[in-house]
Length: 275
Length: 262
Image 1 (tube, rainbow over the protein chains, first blue to last red):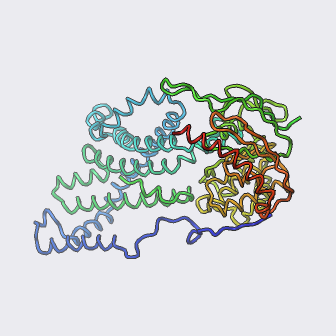
Image 2 (image 1 turned 90 degrees about the vertical axis):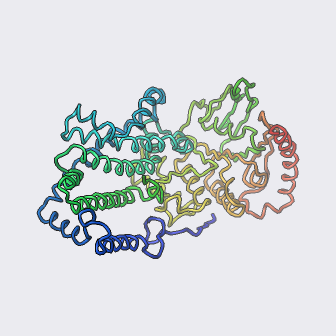
Image 3 (image 1 turned 180 degrees about the vertical axis):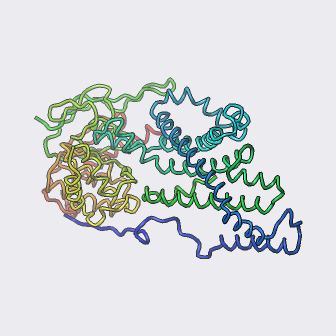
């Protein structure tokens, strides 16, 4: 018997990582330049301090809000809402996507309704949701679920539909039944698309939540911002914006790390899912 | 009794948008003896892959039947292993995971699966790559994994649909030697579809030539080259004689196939 061992391309560090990054860290440089420009603008008083407080003022406010617990209280409320809503959206969207993939007749009959709802922004439904559900947690949950549902559902559906029929045939040749083919072939094959959908859905729902908190809430980061606006505290508004942005980036990063752990065979698909 | 008996198998594809139905296969009769290595040789579009898919149970014949060990085939089953032309490894499973995939259905314990997978990983020369994912492997290594996956379930019949068609010439030649070595050492009944004349002669105990569409068996030529065969057999006069004959047979069909496409 012959033995031929071809050369392989090993992963650096033995694990799949993100695509190679440029050697210079331009990202932080750009960010620092922006802060510098902000600082310069406030020192030169290009804008009244009431509209554009200096960076050090904002950072001092951030420290105060962090120390007296205000920031974390609002942050915790927003995070709990997003966790519940995001899990709820996933629990509805994924089984529905599988059902659509398995039963085309079911998919065809529900498709017009799905298409209709898809084109209505969740924020446009807030007035209706407030009338139906009040201004409590149920309404926030509904907004998050509506915002996260479509990216998760549509991407999972695409992933399931695009499963290579050859892989399904391999399963049939191995003697797998329909349920086993879905569980062992179709779902793993759709996982990259599902993860992209989860990532998009998270971004959508995070923004929708803050929007909902801006309109009708008594706690949460969005409420903190709108309340500060009413008090003419621009520094708190900026702290809120920074917190929302940084938290979004951090949670997205955590999600990507989890996804890489769960699915080490996926290389770059995850980086596509941004919107 | 023959291992595999194909009796009057035809395949007609229904016409699209009012056109006449397309006959892919004329009635095919073929008997395959135990441990035979049959190469089905034909021009592209002659229905040879369709015939293989019918034997695999992935496609239904329009008429006729296929019997394996006397039992009529009604669908896919673990008694037949298949290697496809394109890479069909599961990207989320390692080499070992891919080979264990079919073993799971056989009710083997995890430890038995692993031992068996590693045995076949050794047989296709992939020891040391057990934990690699498909995308880390070259095309040849991926097809060796697919071959190991098909062999590991110990099928009665091994079906290969142009398994080396996407590989470069050198890799393809080495894969042919690997497959032939495994067959000579362990014997299996093999049905191998190809359009490559050299490949067919080198591997087969019998070459079945199919005509252009609608496919029918044009001739059936036993290859009386000694086993074990080495790659040097490809330059012998006997090999050249088979090649000359098969080239003539297949050339007419290739010309007809091209005329059909035009």
